[in-house]
Amino acid sequence: MVFADLVYFVQEGARSIRHNKFISVVAIVTIAFALMIFGAFLIVYTNVSHMTEGWVRQVEVTAYVREDFDPDRVDEIKKILWENREISRVQFVSKEEALARFQSGHENAAYLLDGLEGNPLPASFEIGLSKSARSQGAVDQLVRKLSQIPDFEEVQYGKEWTRSLMTFLNILRLIGFTLGGLLGVAILFIIANTVRLTVYARRDELAVMRLIGATNNFIRGPFLMEGLFQGLIGAVLSLITLFGIYHYWVPKLKHSAGVLLMQEISISFLSISMLSWIVVAGMVLGFFGSLMSLGRFLKI
Amino acid sequence: MIRMVDVYKRYQKDYSALKGISLHVAKGEFVFITGPSGAGKTTLLKLIYCEEQADRGEIRVNGLNLARLRRGSIPYLRRNIGVVFQDFKLIRSKSVFDNIAFALRVIGASKKEMKRRAWDVLRRVGLQHKINGYPLRLSGGEQQRVAIARALVNDPVILIADEPTGNLDAVVAEEIMEILNEIHMRGTTVLVATHDMNIVERMNKRVIRLENGRCVSDSALSDVPASGSEVVGRV
View 1 (tube, rainbow over the protein chains, first blue to last red):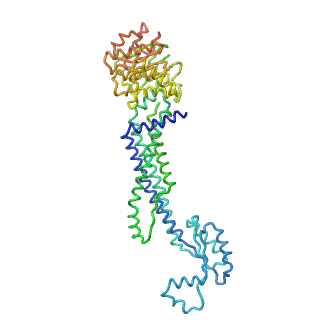
View 2: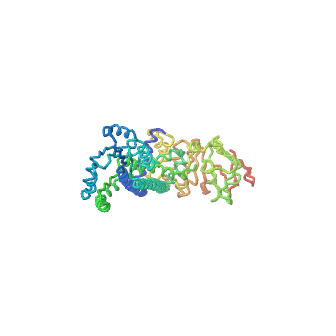
């Protein structure tokens, strides 16, 4: 394909959108709606998974050390722990700190310790988990590994809580991918059918092109460009609308959801990279939608 | 230029459009294909510019055996054949110039070349003053002249016209036929399908008559056998 052809395709694609205003508007609005639904889904998905990942970050493993543990070895143990990439945070809690925490947390039950001699609470390492530990198997494996360190008396973590959380995350991912995939396919067909309208409206033009000896690629060019432009405009339109809705509704939603969950929640808009992906997706969908609908009009 | 040997074309199981057509059109000839509606005139023309493929028989156009032509080569064959229709088939959203220039763009002509040749061909059909007009603002005769200009702009070796005067009144039809005749005088092979016998008689050219998918007479031959399959006309 020569450069002159490409320039011609771009000019013709743009001209065709201007000339077939009604059908172009229908196609662009359809693409915008479809991508808006997809974008809304992405916002919900990313925020829910972000929130759940936040909960996972809160899952901690606590390793209690033996009674005879030498506090001078804290740095050495920390070094051993840091060798595991599943670990994102390590904090040593000495016996004294443990006692202080207990006392501040149970002011009304301080008498429980009265009868005891000295400090019965063990020192411990509080271990935070990194992203790579966000599966049940990975956490179990890490706990088994830590249990083998002789300085540790016992390694504990909220197993049930983690398990439910992980299951929830996995289901969420599965639903996300399935729904996202289905939406993508549905959108492709919607766009293909809408673009087919524009192609159908110009079938005479296609027939003329074939008769004067235009190759199939030459005939396709302007239509593919048109699809690309419609996808681009549709995607930008969908993002603007989506941002408008986000801007208007999210403060209200945040308030009611905050009351419901009894905690401050943050709902973020799509990231820049996701925004660009939606624009690219719009263009790709418009392009392939055109390609799909041109097929049967291009018989030789 | 065009040779058909025992050509058959069937559209549906029970409808044969052409039944054993054989004919030869020499280079530079002017031939009318006549016959009633449904006789197979349009099908015969479509076979020549590969809009349809024959079920049986051999067709050679400009030395090429169409049955052996690769799909990808069909557009290049069509660039040597200009086609004119009853309904003109102009692109309404494009100006007269763009309609004609489009045929040149397809073959990769430069802008300068497009302007020069479009102007030249519009002058030949007497429409240079309408170069910036749009098809829907032109009369039927003018639209057909634009269509002829488009068919001519690539200097085709064959010009095919399918009922070119079907939508036009007698005076305008006469003008169109004069243009086609002038194209023929310059050496182009011209094939015109029509059922307008007035025009055919006035033009005094070779006439091939089709009926029911068979070739029933050919003015180039003194004697036409009843079975069309043996007919080979030659000038």
